[in-house]
Each structure stands twice: as structure tokens, then as C-alpha cells.
Amino acid sequence: MNKPVLFDINWNACINCGACVAVCPQEEPFISPFDTIAIDRPCDIACMVCEMICPVTTITHRDAVPSDYPEGKVTEAFREGEKRQN
Amino acid sequence: MPDFSYDIVIIGSGPAGATTARLAAEQGLNVLLVDKKQELGAPVQCSGAISRHAMEEVGVEPVDEFIHEAIYGFAIYNEKGEKKTIDYRQLAPEKYGPEQGKTPLGYVVDRRRFDRRLMTLAEREGVETWLKAEAKGYEVLPDGTCEVTIHHFNEVKKVKAKVVVGADGLQSIVGKWAGLRTQIRLTELASCLQFVVDKVETEGLLEIITGHEWAPGGYAWVFPKGYGYAEIGLGVVPTFTKNNAQQQVDYFMKSSFFKERFKDARILEVQGGGVPLAAPLKIQYADNMILVGDAARHVNPITGGGLHTALSGGKIAADFLAQTIKNGNDFSAKIMKGYQDNWLEQLGNKMWKLYDVKTEIFKTEDIPERDRLLYGTMSDYFSPNSEYKKI
Image 1 (cartoon, chains in turn purple, blue):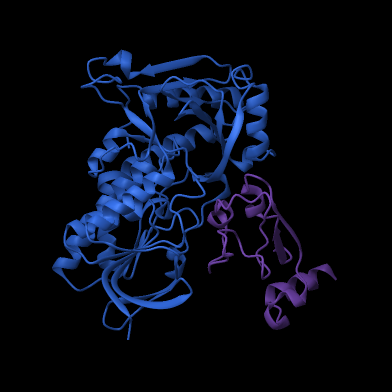
Image 2 (image 1 turned 60 degrees about the horizontal axis):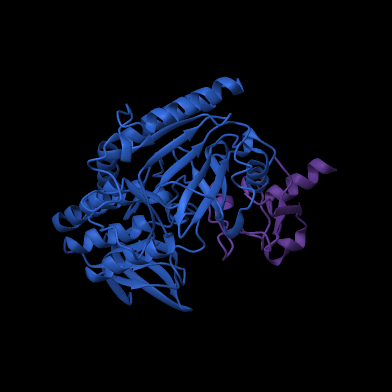
């Protein structure tokens, strides 16, 4: 289990190719309006395959914080990640 | 109450979706074809190579509107630059050539124009088409049909349909609505980048460059692009290299046996995308739903070619839907499975074989041996007496 992350995309290099979405193991659509993975909410899986497949390496991430979650409601994966760190 | 009602709603107007739409309408179905884009085919994520017979099989006439350049054969290179040329102008000069009465083997097409043409042909068969129309979800209704929610120029529209066809490409989400496992493994998705360039000569051949050094996990290509332009690209599989596709193209252009040939290349377009070198989806159907084209991973796992397979798959889907919808009112997963069975029989089983060949090659750990296998397979694949039935 990885610690949940929030992805960021540098749009300057993004070619909107959709490769990051195609390798994403999230069961529910985890997408932005620009054919990329979502950047408006944390990824609880944090497998990073989207970063690896990007032809122009323009996806980055940081550790998710509670305020990244809708209404600050953190998920079980987030609490687990915090526990392991402490 | 839904605002609109059709026999089928097709999400995505690429080659697979538009072909399904056209051939289904031709057989009397009432079809809605939607695409979220404002211009089809853009941004281009495809080299645009397609054989002539792929178009003929589904009744698409090659026209100037979308043809960039005619193709007459192949040149396959190994990692050292030694090549095998398969030029049908020499192999069968009575049939293939630029002269009157002869034909090309295939074409490099402009995907923007090609996709637009395919939509036009669908419209002319009576298909209703909406651009700037993004499908948001579907719900199976108690009466055995389904309702698709579509945002069309900011307006929310509910569309009732018997079957929804997911033709939404590599980044497909339609399958996910029904819980289908559409994820492609990282080891099976080639990360591709290509440049359309000026000042690189080509000779009417698709050139394929193998070798781990140039394209780890994939291959590189140089295709004629018309008007004196060429396309230089490659695909890498991330588990084979730390370089991204962009760095690898740069290395290929500056350091390979083609560095002299490429030294004056001027980049006119940057295109890229993911190409599944994967097995087709194991389940390509659900209640009131089927998937076609890239969305179903209908891509040749050896060449990464997806146009021929998209058109053929579209025809299989259209024929199945026309028959199923005329003959009954059960569109449950059990019935929709018939589409996949037809597809496997007509196309899929061959693709599974190619997938096994490809898997054998890339699980070889010794790099020189893997290079030798890939070069051999590519050379065989494109030869006129290929043991691999062309798909």
C-alpha cells in the first residue's frame, strides 16, 4: 500500500494523449476534462504507472493532505497511510 | 422521460465508432453518434498507416480528402541499420504502382480528415451526429433498454437506447461505467511520440526500425507523410527503459544510423499517445453495451496498428447489432456476448495468436536475441508469403 497522492500535470508539455488514463487501475473513472488522470482529488492507489507511461514525463505528485479530499473527508487509505508513517 | 430515443448510441466518432454507425444505419438502425471533441481526429495520436484492403472491406473509398501519401511496401531495419525491403512495386509490378490501372498497397492518411470523412459517410447514411457532446454515464432501465446522459454544449440530454457502443478510444471510460476491467498493464502499453518533419526523404515505403537501443520494448518508424514531409516516431515500453519516448526520439534522430538522413529535419507537428501492445479485452460487453476499437484494445499487438482492426471491428459490431436489434428485445450481457464471439471468430483469435508471438519476443531477456527475434518477426510479418494472416 502506498500513501495517497495528489497528481499535478504540467499542461505545457501535456499532449492530451490519454495514455495515463489507459494504464490507470482505478475502477471508477479517474479523469480530468483533458483526457488525463484526475488532478482535483487524491489518488488512493498511488501506483504511479501514469507517471511512468507519460511520453513527455509531465505528471508529478505530492503526498495528499486532508484538505485535498472533498469537504476534507479523508478516506480509509489516507488514514492507513498516516498510521504507517507514524 | 428521456429527451431522445435511438436504437444505438455510439460514444466516440473515430474510425471504429463512425464505421459501426454507418454500417448499422445502412442496415436500418436508428443511430446517434456523439463525440466530445470540436474537431475529430485531433490532437493526432496515430501514424495514419492503413492498407487499401482494410478500407475496401468496409466500403470506404480512398479519396484525396484524407490521403497524405500512397504506400507500396515496407523496409524493416535491424538495430545496425541492415534492412529487408518488401516493395510491391517490384514484387508484383503488374498490380502495384502509381501508374494508371495499378493500385497502392495502402496509404498514410491524415487522421483529422479521415475521421471527418468517416463521420460524413455515416451522416449520409442517416446517422445523427453531435459534436461537443460528452457522455457522462449510462443506466440500465427496467424495460431492458438503457439511458445515456450526454452533455451537449453545456446542455444535459438524456438519450434512451437499446445498446450503447463504447468507441471512446484508448482512454475509454464507457467500459468502466459497467465495471469492465479496461486497464492496460504498464508492460503492454507503448508510450509513443512522433514528429511530422520537413527535409527527410522517403520512398513510398513504411520503414520500421527495430532494436532495443532505438526503441526499448517497441520499434521506431519513418513514414512518408505527403507534400515532401515524413513522420519520425517511436514507441517505448516504460518497463524496458528509464528514458521517456521524447528523449528516445531525440536519441534516435541524433545518434542512429539515420543521423545523416535526419540532420536537416525540421519539426512541423508533435504527436503522441499510447498504443496498446496488449491482448484484446477479455470481456468487451455488458448489459446494453459493447466496446469497439481502441476502447476494446482491438489493436494489432505486433505492429500497434489500430485502423484496420477498428474498421473491421466496427463492421462486426454493426452486423451483430443490426441482427440482434431486429430479432429481439433482450440486450442483456448474455446476448451482447454474441458480439464478442463473432469478433473472436472473425478477428480476435488471430490477434490472440499475434499477442502470443509478441509476448514470446519481449519476455526474452537477452537483448541481442530479443532484437534478432523482433527483426525476424517484423520481416516475416510484412513479407508477401507471411505465415501471419494479415489483420
